[in-house]
Image (cartoon, rainbow, N blue to C red; front, top):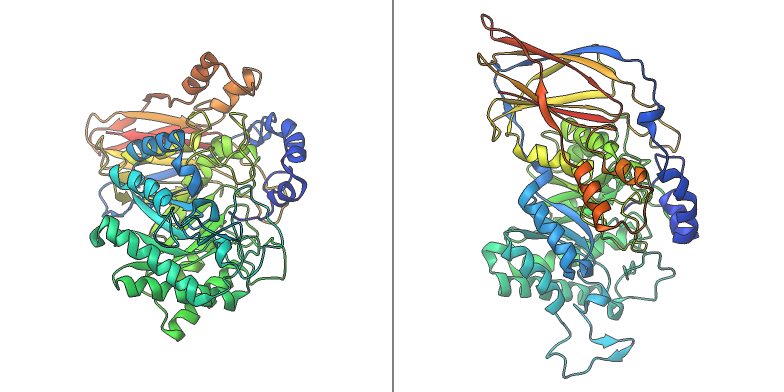
Length: 544
């Protein structure tokens, strides 16, 4: 994860790391009860219009957000509740692969010739590896029709050049360089070879092997840029030596700039310099990868979309671009992660990056998450699509809707709308007709200052080419709809909800699907509807 400035006025994630969970929790307690920007926004409404022409040619709308989802660290993926939530997401949202930190962490025992500096018991293994834990995770994925998105990290203690100067994560992410780069390459190669032996080449060819996580932040990599290039080259060549068809890439750079240690290149420049270096040195790269959160300092005027567009421009022609982490903010404890803001932000990112990215991984699918300690409050500003108890947050419901829409985009033109309003129209979904998805979301500033909240916007949408007798239905995600967080607050914000309370909270997360008035002209095939989008709201209208 990244460490940029926060969108809210609460403590930044860096402050949480520095001061500890107890202090952060005290500060955040009142913030979580704040009604948020939607309640504080100007209630006067702006009027705007949109036009959708179903008679015009469509363009592709691939479901790139379904290709991979992220989920904390590898050891978590051995938990039954974690897997239960993941496979529900796979079934209901269509996620195809899972990316986690730390497949090589010391605690995973993947490479462990020594334990606490002493030789490992020879009765444990015939070699220096124990693939049992990682196999259990990958077996579960493959058995359910998913695939690993392999993040090759972190440095096993037996391989580190020196002890880490600090450790800020609860789990043992080791940011150090290897003491022997050739041995690092051998470990990566043996890892890939084991996977091919176990799962077969045709399966492992589907797995991206991403080398490391955010090397431009010293929290995650202690070495400088040249050290990462060397780390990447040894790993990439080792994977290709197993089989040239296996896919390897990076650099998984963060758009955020805040870090400890010596200054690093900003994410955009680091990514560009990596691609230039790999091209000049003829080092294998099969895909580019990067991370961008709306609150990151290095995103640009369009938020994550600006960063991703620049990454695309810097990616060699023909290579896919995988965004392996994104969300409305990287600051855990920010209540926008539990509210409709996260849904509106993600829909905006999807809308503005069609044709730009080839994968868009939401960070993360669950609040079963230990990077800075496992929270026990059901709503605590966690990154997940689902709470620790499995309650489905507004962003989950958005992805549930998006999973049912088609892959053919129809032109949607806005007039008179504020820059917080946007959307897209899609045909070919499971319900036929056309789906019009609209958001009203104010981007974070990215510099730590408060953003101007969105205002309510009344939108009249005109559709051309609608079949005679068509009807409209609307599903809403906003302060007044699909809001389990508010139900929890109204129940008194219980730290340990009863089963009955959890039932009521889950019920509040359900999407309300109701008729919407559609005015049609049978002679011209033109129809129109009008609705008001609240601040940080999403409306999904189906016409068919």
